[in-house]
Image 1 (cartoon, rainbow, N blue to C red):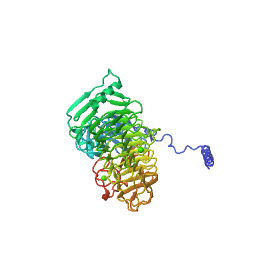
Image 2 (cartoon, protein in one colour; image 1 turned 180 degrees about the horizontal axis):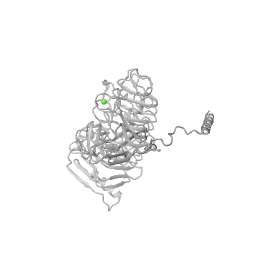
Image 3 (cartoon, protein in one colour; image 1 turned 45 degrees about the vertical axis):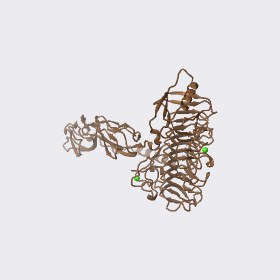
Image 4 (cartoon, rainbow, N blue to C red; image 1 turned 90 degrees about the vertical axis):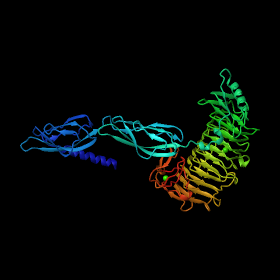
Length: 630
Ligand SMILES: [Ca+2]
Ligand SMILES: [Ca+2]
């Protein structure tokens, strides 16, 4: 067909050429306006252009017949010169008419336009994002713009800054100490000093995270009785320095703080930390301000440090220390009221942190970075199998656990809390790139529920978050797993007393798999966003009798889901358009729902959680998923 059409076209062209016609062009000598377009003008700058015509009988006269020139410019009707100083921005459209001097004058017209641009170019806000702030900490960021005429004036046209922050109009600086948390969507406007003035606006989200001080032990801020400075002795070997440091640590008595100077302290044999404080006189061991203190165990024969093996350790804080090498990184034995804060544990031969030999309680594991584990490879191994050792009433918060998926790792859970452990809070952790689940929690064997909230988990070679039962799971963001984003199933006990609310579960494969929920008591799956690219949104693998399932927004298939428990997104072709910026592979993870999408207002009020993943109080309407849209 295509070849036949081209042949026909060739024949047609040949016929025209043979006819010899001139084809529609004006007659030679006829009056014509030859100016096809006019160059742009710059505001407040002299402009001169001469309209051109040909043919007919000179002289010509000129006229604007429709529209008008930009303010400040005029047309000389005898010369065709458009000149003056333009004063108004924008594009003016007009029709010029040219009349010649023949006895019977010829008259022609042409539509033209002139665009007046601002001096210095168009004003534009160049800031594309604002750094996140922290509640109670000084914040500073400065908005930037280009073009127009400086100085600029900045303002906010919609939305508000967090309490404690202020915008300086003359500089675009946002500064202060925020007291409120959450993500505010703010429309900033810049105005220049040109005449006329230009403006530009941009919507920028500003996030303020909680300080997390609510996770810290009250005794942690007690005043030390005395502070001992321990300095690295450059005249000695790394091993000798370790030996001296080990001695200094175990010599600490209640109320003392040991402040360690920068250096790499290398150990090669077993070490057990045994110093112990009390509630009014804790012991602190921490790096000097700004110092990098590395405790390295050469080889994998021993854990880097053991704490409380054979003797109880109480009221001990360890902060800002980097632990590398060894077998387990830090292994807690008979420990209660131990605060492990802002440390790094990495390059270990086994789990990063473990509490699986003795029962532990009132542990505070906060703000640590744990990565590059090996062996069974858990970032945190908390409690032991089948309730043999339990952790209780402890807080695991604000940690960054990642890359527990090295090829030689056999399991590599990010945070694993074993059967029987109870009353613990796992909150605001960032856990990603794990071989096994990023967060795996079993049951409490009838004790108080654990709480798993406001965590962000992504990239797992298993289920990204797996919770057996006896737990409250809320406001988590979970993306991308080889298994399901979220799974609940029999592990070392049965699913029971499990409430899963206001989470966002995203996976190219199955989003949510709920097994053995049928007939279990107090099972709630409400107000979640469950999006699968090519599999099930929600699958009740073994039935749903007795389960509360309401307020969920889904994309993907449903398997045995109670009627009325879900509403499908209207963005069926690409459900991720419901979010500010989210990808199936978790490279983008902003799950704030966009205005007008199905998620907005889809939540069920009976199962509402009062805050969202940022800690902000949820405002009407009630969104499903982990983010409130204010
Ligand atoms: Ca494991
Ligand atoms: Ca809302």
